[in-house]
Length: 245
Ligand SMILES: [Fe+2]
Image 1 (cartoon, rainbow, N blue to C red):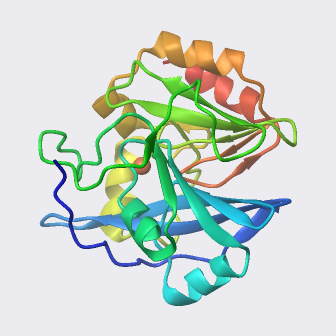
Image 2 (cartoon, rainbow, N blue to C red):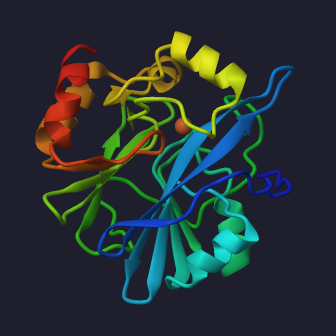
């Protein structure tokens, strides 16, 4: 059973930027409610193939932002690689009729995995699934609960699109409010080439599996859900934090 909920509204975001031919990236934000709302940045990656767009780590954009997205092509697919992301997937499905592909993890609100999910994806994907993107494959971190994946696009020496696992918040930016600036620095989120501390705590992945996966895939770049893109030498840059897990 799913319990649909209203689509979350668009929150502040920047412009879509083309990082590699046909691969676009936009930084937006999310606010976690509560007595002291905490707002921080998150990113969406958009891959253009022919005239079709595939969204990974969806972030709902404002109307002008959606017009800019539509100018790139037709939104056909959404891929959810991170269980703690996906709040805007239903919006993109509704607005564009996109097919939603997700790792095997319920869409639950916040960090409460006991409630009824708010959405059911069209397809559940794992490491053996055909994806709507050419030259792309998913590698699951299946020891994480709920599970997460890294999406490898085999171009440009290897581009990994990551969810909460590989982050790169070297500094806070304009999308962080004051509570987020203070708290997230204290909690160890604000570091370059980092493995998400919140994700480690919540999903408890096996460090050995992360090391194995990182050793097996070849990549030069990381487009994370949190922080700046890592362009060049990414595998080496993440190696110390992965070794220290
Ligand atoms: Fe996240």
